[in-house]
Image (cartoon, rainbow, N blue to C red):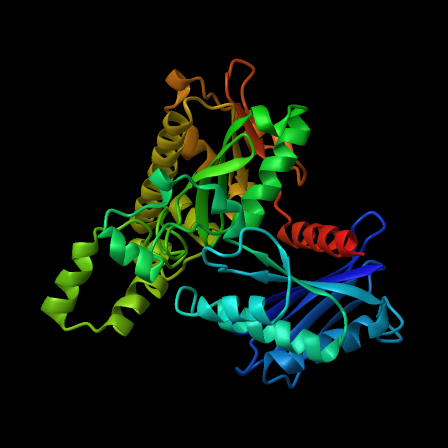
Length: 402
């Protein structure tokens, strides 16, 4: 039995095919720069076969067709035909208030995804295009939507409400939704397994730090607060997103510089964060760390601000949960930057948080602990695997229906 996981974005489609026997990736890849110059596909299978070439792919439908052809290719494919795909799981960013768990996709689910277009204009439209393309390519095959927002549906009212007129919030569905939920749920569960402690007894702060960054307070396996809000813009500074900001700044810029909403959206989402704050020309933390080693003041500025904001959220969430048992780092920066982990945790020794610098620097691709023997709080690095979690939830849902 095989499950295909699809993550369709505005200009790319990422995919992984899982053999459900052991839930191992049989093949993975991405079609990138769709509709742009230099469209290409990268593909590799579990036997070492690889494909990397330019392709003539103009839309998501054509990308899905190419993916199915690669998976059943006589030379590098891993299945005989499309009929060996038993289910397709889709990453969908926004499920609104309605979608609280993974669901089999039908017309009502499609309409819910469509109704969230304004809440996630860069993500939900291509997510739905990917669903429609797979329905056409794999007719009759069950499709499942796994929502980034679903893990955070357990937020209590005190955490998800904004102090706007309540009638307006209800009418426009304005609230904290939270994102990266699939990752936060996956790493919190894996951390509990690694610690050999029931998830229900743990108070954790999970730090998903990549080009997009979010943190979550996970109390007994339930998300009780998270840094992203109504959209993925709120919270920590990110690659190109500003994170937390005084809303009056936007009014000031609109009035003084005549910025319209489209210009403001571009400023906040594409020109800010590490890119804008640093002024180094890069939003990649790896480049910033290289620049930091050379004494670049912009890189110093970014890393000081970023580490401080992480530290502030850790403290806020620890107090909100009434204590803290573990801090989990994941995603590209969280897993691979000892510098950011050290900067974020330094100075917290008085709260029982003490990093072991040797363990922190050790290169290891698996789950590992990096706390000092005297630390009262366990500190973990847990590689995230959102695709595997989507495949697992898809399998559970499809299996339960049979």
